[in-house]
Length: 68
Image: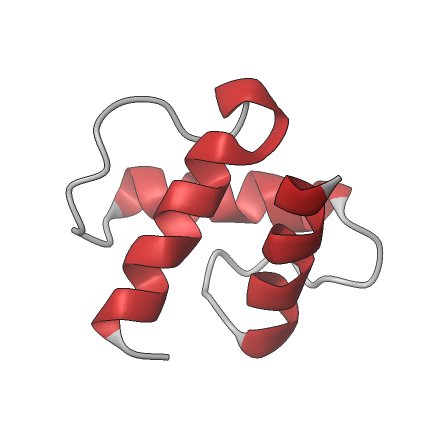
């Protein structure tokens, strides 16, 4: 995944479930808060491994979560 995909992941985390996973300004920096938020989402979504790293399965799950 490229930098744009990672920024989209952060925005999805911010939008999903009323900012439960990521709060604050999306700055495009993939840091410890980003990994923590992604890990929290992954641990709650069936079939995802909570690694804190973005992959295609996580990206697809985030898109689905936002659409619901």
